Length: 533
Image (cartoon, rainbow, N blue to C red; front, side, top):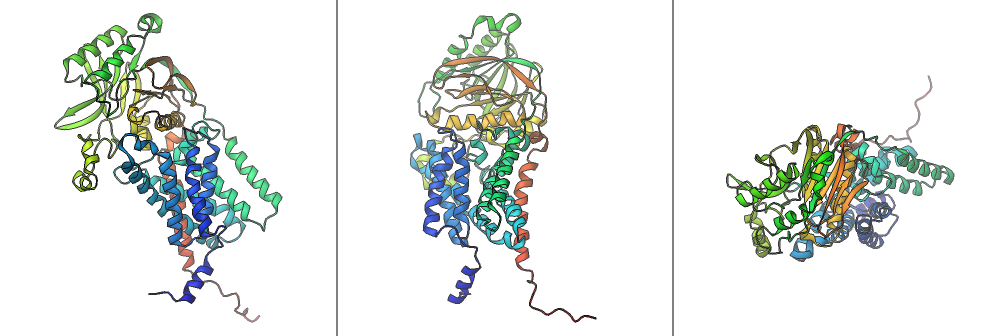
């Protein structure tokens, strides 16, 4: 049914007042993208993440559904074009723009939900309690809901760019041990949404508004760090060979292996004998190629090194079984070979495999054909028993998958080994962004984490998020440390993804309740009171 001009005017009149005209909201949304991105590693100006969130929320208030989608899409497009610009380094603009646009479409859909929340929730819960109590909760929950959807769909999702991932070095980082990454994101958006509502609550005294704002900030910052208890240590060496590990390096077979061997042999001999004997040596993703389970030369090298240092080696390689290819981590022991292995469960779509290849190839055949082999997602557990130490294994993009962290913690991981290969992204922000996520995982789980890359950034991070030791990026090096073994169960680990489902569910449930309340009849206060009896 076509709306009459009168109906359209009535509909516009029913909208809450927009603080920004549409043209200005569009500009603010576009500006919010790079402001948000500046809060993440590279620039690492973490307070700007809060500013960017506020810009997005302001631009969404008082919009029609169509304009809300436009504003949300523009904000997402501007954010991702900056945040994941490293995807264009070798493959050019097509994958970069395609990925950014896909994620931005989710931002557009999420923007519609945010706008509806600003429109409906104050009517469902009128008064100050509704505006200051319910609106920020629903808005923050819907933000996390959008992050949940983009992190899981399509093809396993893309969790890169969740607002909490900008806070690895901020005073808010300890909250991930209590709430997880999604819970921290909820708190961040809730806090910004509350401050915005306080700003517009002109019917509340300025002194009261200021006190509520200061109190909310203080309460969040006052949450103490989780006491991540440890018991004992394990001595770990991690090796960054800085070899030609990039997809387009066109290096001869074994070149990366050679650099790993050379740097491993630089570990002082004193580390392989006496009281300071190594308990394990960790190599990055894809470092031990050709596959030592099939290549006798690689196998003999790992045997010799494992025997020399008297320790198992945890190495990344590419394996083939039953006609399928896997990105694999091996636990190698001298004389025994691969005593355990883990296959990466979250290969990167359009990076490590092409889903629905026949459908996508006609759109960009030259790019699709670059991915000559498709990795199969693994099914094995992601914990090794290394001499009595339970080591959780994460391969590259696995680190962003909340469920994989839950799985390794449920299987008793005492330390996390995060093997990765960042060579394809050069000296961009990608490796620092990944390290930031790994740091948050260490805090979230209460476990020390060894982040070892082919080229960097490689660090050993304590369960409190502090750097124990590191290797400079893009230089050969090794690090050796007595790594504490975690024994605590953090609230984030205990509640796991239940926190994410709870806060996202709060947002969706609040919006649905507000939508339902719109259909209820409004009491007619003009009716006369019944006669007295």
